[in-house]
Image (cartoon, rainbow, N blue to C red; front, top):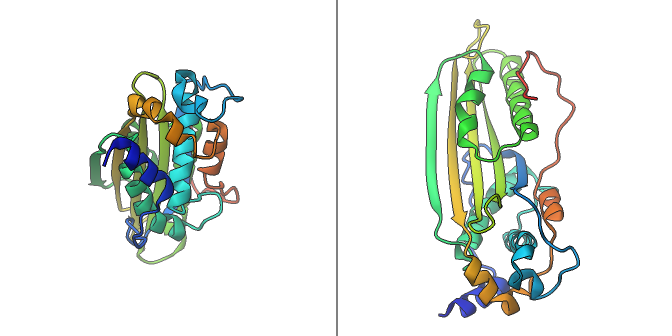
Length: 256
């Protein structure tokens, strides 16, 4: 099939596979989306203009990502963590099969250690997250603090796993944009009689999708069939609601 035919297929046909929870017993507690760089798009652009004019690339990519998320039935604002986990594998497949994205590059990171300081865990993983904003970093720190509280309050031997997912559209170099998708699983274990977490660990999967600009421009007519989605709209609809009713049992170091 030609690239044009592949794009037409990707736009109009939904791949049929069963949802698989790739996170095991855990599911994404928080899903975040953001964009790095400047949104140069003309909000009035429409149709083929979105895909043929370089300035509108952010809107083009937001529209494509919104389209594949809809096809995968992946909706962080309204779905439960379990539903998101089941849709995630289909979403990755939809992105991988959409011809505007180059072959996926995957890196895996994992480490186990003993520490009662939850900030140690964050300090070890933060360098892995390209594009994690200060706001999202503080949210992640707070979430791990809540996780620690949950482990302690369970009594006896308690364990907990927390999953953080992140989608970053990196446009800092408009000539070489790429999509980053992270999934991070954090694990904590506490034994009765101890006043600290005994074990901590993390597993992070980093997926990188380079974006093929020439393919987008050459197939603007076909891609124009996709519903338009502005970057701010995509970010809002790809970010799960925050839980604000937690009381922390210890202090976490937030960043300014």
